[in-house]
Figure 1 (cartoon, rainbow, N blue to C red):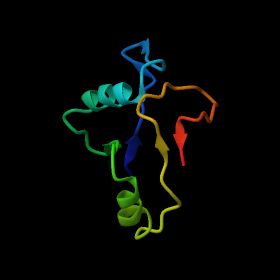
Figure 2: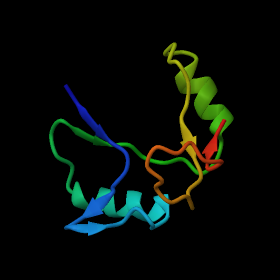
Figure 3: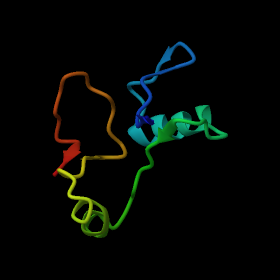
Figure 4: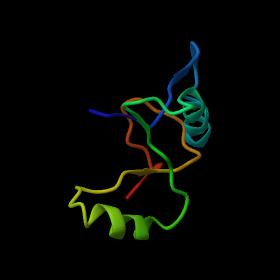
Length: 85
Protein backbone atom coordinates (compact mmCIF):
# COMPACT_ATOMS: atom_id res chain seq x y z
CA UNK A 1 0.00 0.00 0.00
CA UNK A 2 1.20 3.49 -0.82
CA UNK A 3 -0.20 6.65 0.72
CA UNK A 4 -0.39 9.37 -1.95
CA UNK A 5 -0.27 12.94 -0.61
CA UNK A 6 -1.10 15.81 -2.93
CA UNK A 7 -2.02 18.85 -0.86
CA UNK A 8 -1.23 20.44 2.49
CA UNK A 9 -3.92 22.24 4.50
CA UNK A 10 -2.18 22.67 7.87
CA UNK A 11 1.57 23.09 8.22
CA UNK A 12 3.06 22.76 11.72
CA UNK A 13 -0.25 23.84 13.24
CA UNK A 14 -0.82 26.80 10.90
CA UNK A 15 -3.74 26.93 8.45
CA UNK A 16 -2.25 27.29 4.96
CA UNK A 17 -5.47 26.94 2.95
CA UNK A 18 -5.29 30.56 1.76
CA UNK A 19 -1.85 30.06 0.23
CA UNK A 20 -1.69 29.18 -3.49
CA UNK A 21 -1.66 25.46 -4.27
CA UNK A 22 1.87 25.68 -5.70
CA UNK A 23 3.17 26.97 -2.33
CA UNK A 24 1.26 24.31 -0.37
CA UNK A 25 2.72 21.58 -2.61
CA UNK A 26 6.25 22.96 -2.14
CA UNK A 27 5.83 22.91 1.65
CA UNK A 28 4.42 19.37 1.43
CA UNK A 29 7.44 18.19 -0.56
CA UNK A 30 9.76 19.63 2.10
CA UNK A 31 7.94 17.69 4.84
CA UNK A 32 8.64 14.41 3.05
CA UNK A 33 12.25 15.07 2.08
CA UNK A 34 14.01 12.73 2.14
CA UNK A 35 11.38 10.36 0.77
CA UNK A 36 9.62 8.11 3.27
CA UNK A 37 8.81 4.45 2.48
CA UNK A 38 5.16 3.96 1.56
CA UNK A 39 4.49 7.67 0.96
CA UNK A 40 4.28 9.19 -2.51
CA UNK A 41 4.21 12.96 -2.80
CA UNK A 42 2.19 13.60 -5.96
CA UNK A 43 4.03 16.06 -8.18
CA UNK A 44 2.51 18.80 -10.24
CA UNK A 45 2.92 19.36 -13.96
CA UNK A 46 3.04 22.83 -15.41
CA UNK A 47 3.00 21.97 -19.07
CA UNK A 48 2.12 19.30 -21.61
CA UNK A 49 -1.14 18.05 -20.04
CA UNK A 50 -2.17 16.40 -23.32
CA UNK A 51 1.09 14.41 -23.44
CA UNK A 52 0.62 13.29 -19.83
CA UNK A 53 -2.95 12.24 -20.63
CA UNK A 54 -1.89 10.30 -23.74
CA UNK A 55 1.13 8.62 -22.13
CA UNK A 56 -0.25 7.84 -18.68
CA UNK A 57 -4.03 8.00 -18.47
CA UNK A 58 -4.95 6.22 -21.71
CA UNK A 59 -2.38 3.35 -21.62
CA UNK A 60 -3.11 2.61 -17.95
CA UNK A 61 -6.86 2.83 -18.58
CA UNK A 62 -7.28 5.35 -15.79
CA UNK A 63 -10.53 7.25 -15.38
CA UNK A 64 -9.04 10.65 -16.02
CA UNK A 65 -6.74 13.41 -14.92
CA UNK A 66 -7.42 15.89 -12.12
CA UNK A 67 -6.09 19.38 -12.66
CA UNK A 68 -6.27 22.53 -10.60
CA UNK A 69 -4.77 25.95 -11.20
CA UNK A 70 -1.43 26.40 -9.41
CA UNK A 71 -2.54 29.74 -7.95
CA UNK A 72 -5.77 28.41 -6.43
CA UNK A 73 -6.52 28.50 -2.71
CA UNK A 74 -8.24 25.66 -0.88
CA UNK A 75 -12.01 26.07 -0.66
CA UNK A 76 -13.63 23.22 1.31
CA UNK A 77 -16.56 21.61 -0.50
CA UNK A 78 -16.37 23.96 -3.49
CA UNK A 79 -15.72 22.94 -7.10
CA UNK A 80 -14.57 26.36 -8.20
CA UNK A 81 -13.45 27.45 -11.65
CA UNK A 82 -9.89 26.65 -10.49
CA UNK A 83 -10.58 23.00 -11.31
CA UNK A 84 -9.56 22.48 -14.95
CA UNK A 85 -11.25 20.04 -17.29
